[in-house]
Image 1 (cartoon, helix red, strand yellow):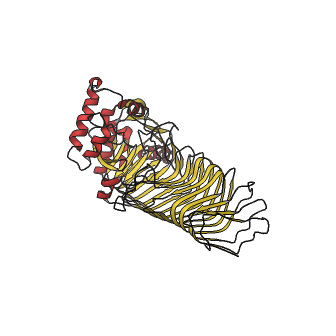
Image 2 (cartoon, one colour):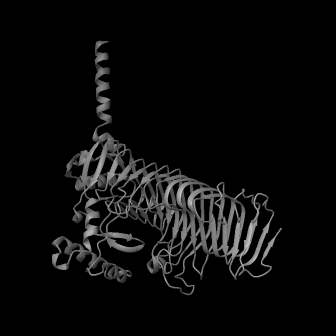
Length: 537
């Protein structure tokens, strides 16, 4: 009996030792980086050890590369198919600030133009079934990249270091014979080659990508940047980049399909989430849309925009839903931007169940004049926005409720707003648009009209109101609007006039089935409006 008891105790000691041994872990598909020479002291550079761990897992047909608690300094991590990086709680991967570590250059895309550039710190090219998971952290250590980005244009050729000359040489060798070379020459300015920072996590032409649970900070440029990738899921992560850090967008799917972003918390130095599909001629040449995108249950704090589409959208963006999100403190809430020369179409977008607060500029902005450009005839260079729908949105403390600006040669079209409640300093402005609808929309402003529309066709307004009418201030101001229907409105006392109509190009204004009992002068028609244009009961 005594021998049996001793054997049991020995067995209990040996089983855990076996289970957590390197042999058993590898057999189960777990590959601990410490077993391959990595050191979690925050000082030793672990690039080769991590590379060997990934190679061992790949040779096994795939598996999980495991980072126990500790701090791991490393150069770029290049993934392989069927590999999961698991960053355990308490583990921090910190990337080197030596730019030479990110050579050789790799295939990438920079602001919508294909390029061969510095490797992303975490990079995958033409892979399948890859994941980055855990409760640990990735630190891009981006301050060195930001500082050099600011300095680069001021460095005179006579002062170029050997490193700068090397980076320029490699960039020219890799890109000189590409179709986008002319663009890079222009961008370089007085330098032989531009200095382009890499994104932190970048997958190019990959399938089945998962990023889950981790926290991320301090990217060289964009934080998560999947390119030409399919079935990308970003779930339950947090991104914290300094508010002043340049171009440190959070999550930027670029010409991807089937992207799912959910339960994320994002506070960054640029846009929180941006959907892109290529810039100008190069984007149209590639011709790959960003489509079938869902964004839900996310919170956004600092950032230029909560969710943004463009301006690089030359390959089209379509079939996007944005729902159940909170934007608190971003410069803008929803922003869609483009300009002449981009081409491409943004369409089939739905935004619903959104709460915004402390929005520094516009809560909603659709702008086709991202950079002012002269008129040109409609061509492949002409962008389009259409079929975009907003519903169930609450906004407090915004500078402006909304802004819609199309092109005179190609107006924004088919935009609807349903069940919207906005408190802002100023209201909605619309110009060069058609097929615009407002239903059950409440806008409380501090100054000016709640809605100003100019050069707009087919404008339908119902249930449009304010709880705080401004004395002697028109609530709806339309100029040169054609085909306006205004109905089912019940303005409060003091809303005088409720609507003002002006412009000699105004046509077919129908005002019916409203309750104007509380106001004495609900409709004001300008002298420049042709006779019989306004019909009212």
